[in-house]
Image 1 (cartoon, rainbow, N blue to C red):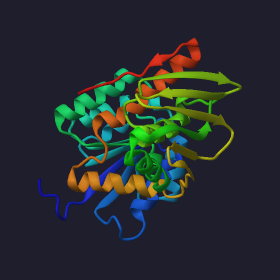
Image 2: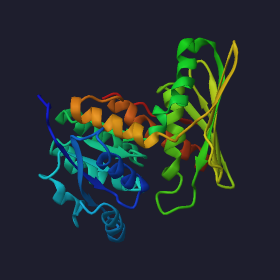
Image 3: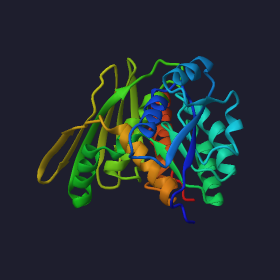
Length: 294
């Protein structure tokens, strides 16, 4: 497919999310993405649609997001509540339209599998989830593990959590830590043991050769990672200042080249990881992490 000189018209569903404002601003400001134009905005919060349009008057509000079908070349699903993502994404994927699906990709593991199987069947590229997996500091931690995985002894990650919210509770913010975990330590965790106390969740995640700890901490807005191997301790404060730029770059590359930076399996692996964590801390049991092969 020749996409040279193609202008991509984009619709955003989920104007209540700060991400919608950031994406619209990045794609409409400057000369970096002259071939990508955000034109339509819609979602379940009319007042948020109006607020975004007031800031970006060129936007057109679509009362029914599905009316974007036939008008857009790509869609960005940015609803704050992950339980809405599959509902909005599926008709566009069925129509062959590339999609960005924000974090969490979905809340339900079966919905996640259904979406990516449909995308694979239709040949539709997807991107999304948490941009933290693409942060420089996360990639440096991942590189430390990748150099000699057999030398890793333990590791740990700390990230914010919001347990009390209107956006599926635990799932609203926890994707950031889940996606960093899998990007750094591998997409093949075996099982998790989790404890919830005072809206904080502590997790032991067992891999084949090592065990890592995750701390989902309510009210502490800091991202930090450690890898301990036979050579010592490697640790980094994780800078998230460029996360929206990372997401836009990945989205643009997906549209221009119809290539995915992360596989379908990698996009949905965090959903199954978080499902296992949730089941573990609510039941008090160690839970296997589901593996999906498409």
